[in-house]
Length: 51
Image (cartoon, rainbow, N blue to C red; front, side):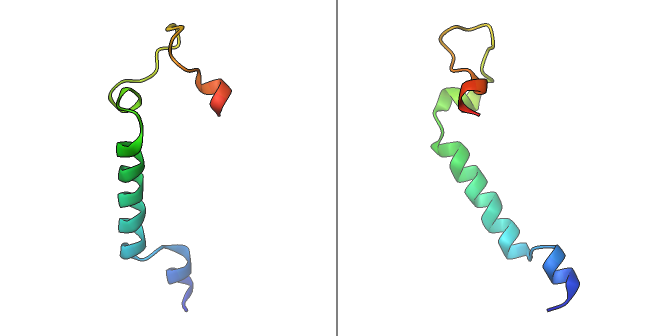
């Protein structure tokens, strides 16, 4: 294997990663996808607790 193939993933791997990323976003709750969490909203889960 040459060094270029090791450094950059093949297009197929990039496509699979992109599909998985989109699938993960679609699987997330709609409120988390459509709007950013409001830090002033007491009902919104805080990202500092989960991260």
